[in-house]
Image (cartoon, rainbow, N blue to C red; front, side, top):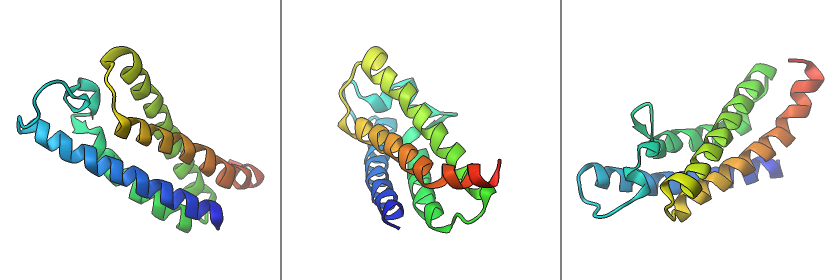
Length: 134
């Protein structure tokens, strides 16, 4: 129960950062942001959609899912989802450090949240998935 609550709080933090960056992405698309910004980078979009928009869907979905996952398949889908999000955060963190070279505390907050969600979801669901078989 406590781990699920911590995951929910982390998802709230992730949602806040995603909505903040989504607002900034919208402003950039309207030409309202002067100078360089991470939201102007090609890496700020996945499949033509702002990463922040995907995050604004992802975090509430994970926050709800951790409370309602009762089947092996649902746990496996959730685990795959958080693994993909954490992997994407690794790619984007690398980009921030070595390609874009821009400071973005909101980006780093989202990355840390994704990595923490990966650890907590694995701790919560992997033993159950493995005990029942994949």
